Length: 171
Image (cartoon, rainbow, N blue to C red; front, side, top):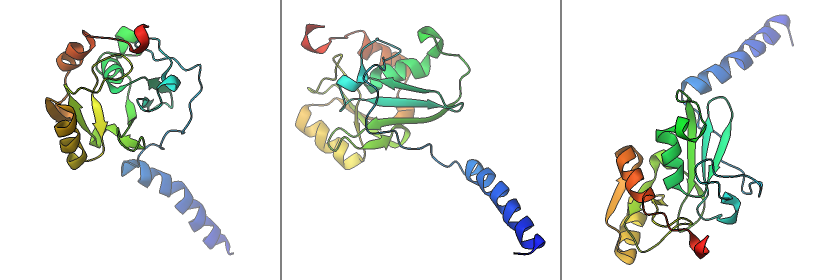
């Protein structure tokens, strides 16, 4: 390859990551299995014990936090300083698991059902689903109160669900 060809290749390799970042390339999907010693920064439980409910918050700096459900993840998201995080942290991605398939889904695009008869590891939970159809079906089958998108959830709603914590197994 000529010098000009090499130079173009190098420029392309340097330019491509910048374009990907500018276009909002999603953060990588979480690993299937997490370390059993990982603790939820909100409640101290071990998320690996509840694989169906694991949710993950990835910071722009590369730090990753695991939670035993979206309720605790959202408590941290809205007030990280209360749980030892930096108030000005930049969130790169938020992942959770679809209730039916347990596959990772982008929480910012998910649908969440509240007020159902399905409880997470610590009681009432935001039950995540990948589509509106799944959310409607879940709500019908499990007596849910409402279907919400990520941007509709506020700190007051998170607090109201957390105020009724009830851990599985009497923990």
